[in-house]
Amino acid sequence: MTKTRTAAAPDSSASVQPGKAPTGIAGLDELTSGGLPRGRPTLVCGGAGCGKTVLGLEILVRGATQYGEPGAIFTFEESSDELAANVASFGFDLPGLIAQKKLIVDHVLIEPSEFEEAGDYNLDGLFIRLAHAIDAVGAKRVLLDTIEVLFAGLGNKDILRSELRRLFRWLKDKGVTAVVTAERGERSLTRNGLEEYVSDCVILLDLRVEDQISTRRMRVVKYRGARHGSDEYPFLIGDYGFSVLPLSSLELVHEASTERISSGNRELDQMLGGGYHRGSSILVAGGSGTGKTSVAALFAATCSRERPALFFSFEESPAQLIRNMNSIGLNLAGMEKKKILRIISTRPSGFGLERHLFRIYQSIEEFEPATVILDPVTDFGAVGNKSAIRAMMTRLVDHLKTKGITALLTSAQGTLAADGSHADSDAGVSSLIDTWIVLQSFEVAGERNRAISVRKSRGTAHSNQIREFVITDGGLMLVGVYRDAAGFVTGSAREAQQRHDAANGGGVANNGARVPNNGARAPKTSSRRPGAA
Image (tube, rainbow, N blue to C red; front, side, top):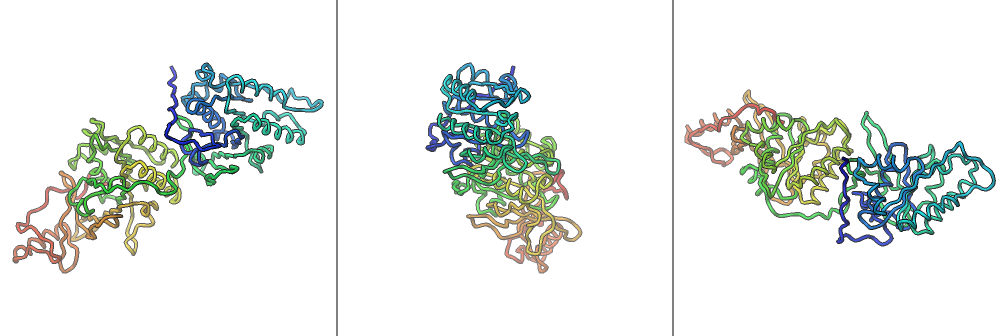
């Protein structure tokens, strides 16, 4: 039995713009400032396989199910049964909607080989069928798919142009919101080169393949009398039809909470002035082995039934991540069992940035987390350039902020630049982030140690110190700042200096920080943490 999706009822609190016919498609109504022009024709054009028919069908299905606007579908290529079978995978139950008289489908079979130009050619017969179908269900929306078939055997271009104008004028006079699909021409938006001029709205769909990865783009070429987004926007055709991915909030109107939430480590919370701000974005950046995944998992482990966490891992499987974090005292498996944590692992190179973004959006809608973690975002460099990754991260961070979700991203970075920045390897997202934590690994006295610092944290007084931290079997431990005459001291050199100072009546580091007088060593640590990022 085929599982079908019932479209959600329209939000009664959402206002429908005057003169607009909302599509109900995520993102498209935002680009068109409320929907398609009501009572006027919209042209959807593009090459083969770009999704013209799916978009047209979804606009009519959602109109019938969500907005109480019955529709008439005229198909010139596929029969009613073929159309129903092809879109069933998206959850569109065409036979059910036809039985409820919310939709009517008419397959107009036209064979170009049977064309014979004799006398005046006109579309009077089509107008009669259109009028009958519209009256049969009281249609408010009409789909014509695809218009080239109507004129495939007509050689007289003057008649063609005249009848195209007649068709679009007839649709306007009927007051129906029409969606007309057309194939893209070589040097124009359509093969005939006229439809784009007589349409009130033109939407161009594009399917392209770059570096063996296919991506889809949408652009609203024109929209008479209305403000609209004119850039190219990525879109996907997924299990539930169309999803367009515009910037969620071009005006940056999301709220800013003053509530603090713990990072999972008391000392790090103190460095941050009390923890992260709820709904903020955090970047944990550092080279390989500096502990990025550990810091991220520590934050994920603060999840609860009230604050579930969603962890996207792009380098480790769920089982591997659970095992590795268990070595530092984090029971992620127990959290997963309680359904307060969900771990999703995918390879970034598996598909394009848009599909990754869509899957993240979809998982957020399904799980409804309070915290989202992506580890690491720099792995997306395998499927997109820096500007594409930044565009993706801008959309994601803005989406999460709009929903009040706290986001933590990790970023793999190489060596520091002269100014201490990592601009060449942070995927271009550091400027989007509210709190930027930098992890470093350096060699002192023949051993490699780790350090942590807060590079920036918007809206809070934070520490400017570089703190040594160690990864123990009980979690992360930040060590008090210790300096000698040579500067910042870590690891065994720090312990030796502490014992020396204590033996000579010291106990207070040169910078004023108090040091244990008994020379006690830290809990058992490892020079490496299995699976450290």
